[in-house]
Length: 310
Image (cartoon, rainbow, N blue to C red):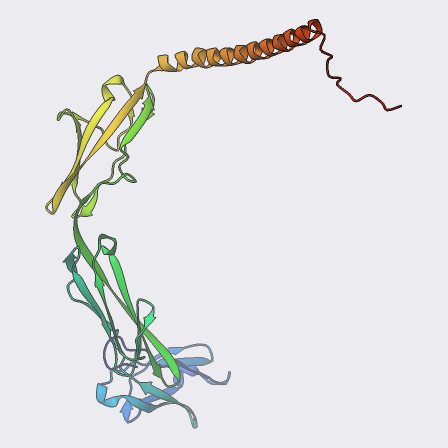
């Protein structure tokens, strides 16, 4: 049990009675040390159970005897247990400030019961003890980051755990990058497309993408691609912490381009085939002409194979 915070319930003591005796006629005496308790009694056919809760103070920390006695007629049954009273509140996780600007140094600190051992974000205190801390320089990636402290206390040979977490908020200006806001889109005309451009920042910036300062790009909406959608847009993300801009270009492929591509490819293939055929024809013609000249000049032709020796 703990003198502060929720109090653990006392152990439930169940006493089995003989079948010939009436459990409802039994009397129960329950005491913690010198303090008599007022139990809630539940009766069964031939059994009963008694439960009681008690509040203790820090001065009563330590071990005490719990006595449960059941009296029925001239018979008495009793049992005793040792109860350990302890205080173990959850650890405290402290940040220099819960909300800081990008680039600010933040001290994260965890402190627990003097006899406890803590781990801050999974790293044990050095040396092991009730206190741990570290220093970080806040970045946008730290926005919404949770810092967890786990404290462990040994009580009567058992380990008791308590945890606490705190969240850090980092303020930073708007961001528009290639990953979340591509700079170039090429779409077939009359197709259904959804332009996507995500701006980041804390607070979350407002985003507008305009062509010629007036024609908006429907970010996040499904649209039918037309020639009017083609062009270069200026995307602007703005918040109380500044603004950033990025150009986005939309290219629209007309269906007639697809029709033209097929003849062009076919012509390229035909020309390539014709070129190879012409080359082979001219080469064979030159070889025949050379052999004819050699024959007219009386120059013997080199045999293709060596003569068989006598």
